[in-house]
Length: 160
Image 1 (cartoon, helix red, strand yellow):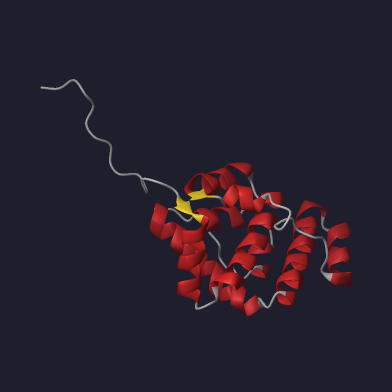
Image 2 (cartoon, helix red, strand yellow; image 1 turned 45 degrees about the vertical axis):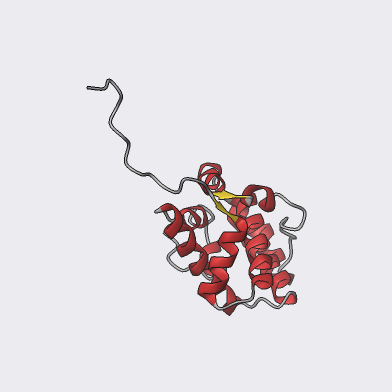
């Protein structure tokens, strides 16, 4: 008999999902071109990195190799915007107002890159499913729910 502990049940992938794999799976599931998916995922990760709950973000970063580096890149950094309404939201809404203003800026930036709100409504659920299939957990939805009001704006209704 061995004194070693019994094997632990399999708790997830042997290695993290890479950003490239995540983007590829989300592009295939959403029917979008990978270049547009990269743009959208970069912007969304930047927004979530700025406004999401750190523990939820770390769980996502631990499972998606390269996500943290991308989220904190200059390319991902949210640009405050969203026009007049975004400015009103920023000044009137406290922390959630800032997140909404940044999300509106992200939507405007993505629109200029050829990614519509309709595209996001297809893409973000596909991205959530890709992570959930690889990890068994809805890590992206878990982060989105920590940013009040942003889920619907990003096309993730009922993010939990």
